Length: 322
Image 1: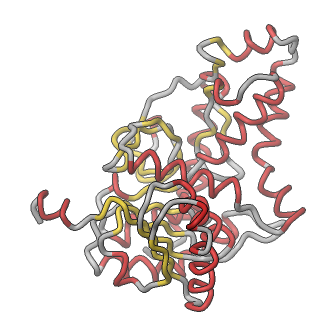
Image 2: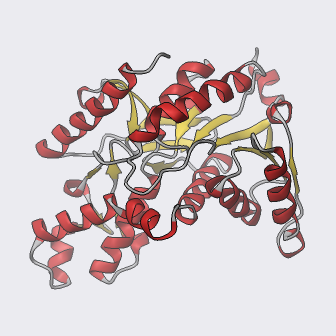
């Protein structure tokens, strides 16, 4: 298919949401308010649920911007610029994201072939957990080029890290540059060695604000970030507002071709000695999806932890039949 024909297939103002549970419906609501799209189709195994969510969100249009929101089928996603997948079983209290793997891979084995056979030209954004494994699954089953299959990865974890650091330092979290990398899960790494506050080394800025127990404080913050989802799930059964905002941000970057740097989940090809595993590293993201990984500096301990995280994911992948 030539590029001109390919471009004509995509409606850059259209988004598809597959899965209308807590995360899907909250993300759809967030996207409706964003003004990024003029058309949104919702798809769910429970058609009535999709119809109900579409109606409920559509009734807020007079308070926002004009757009078309409706429940549809896979035939309605062909020209969508971004196809978001949030479908899957929910993480239960005391359940890790990796515990969900077999249930949700089975669901993806039904969903992804439906997308692939329609020759969709948009970008596939995977949000369901375990997001790294499911992004890998979507990549292998869809036949899409690697740049067009993105996982939400550690975008939310990174926001949680910035939030906690901002709280700790009494500074605007948007002035903090720091990443969570690796698995979106228990083996994730807070890359503190490359963290800074508006160009000032994190440790130096901490001391400016009267904090000197760097190892103790960073360890505690990293643990809090890692366990955030477990804490929220224990208290209210599910997390959805934070991830909905992360989904909106990723869509913004793609639709506006911002070329922003986000720690999305994508395929690794030898960086840090990691091959054929999908995990989160900072990447330049724009209208074509992932353009390139950004080689942030990591110390030896962080690099080793990243490899351990990759091996954790690789072992799970090897147990799947893809």
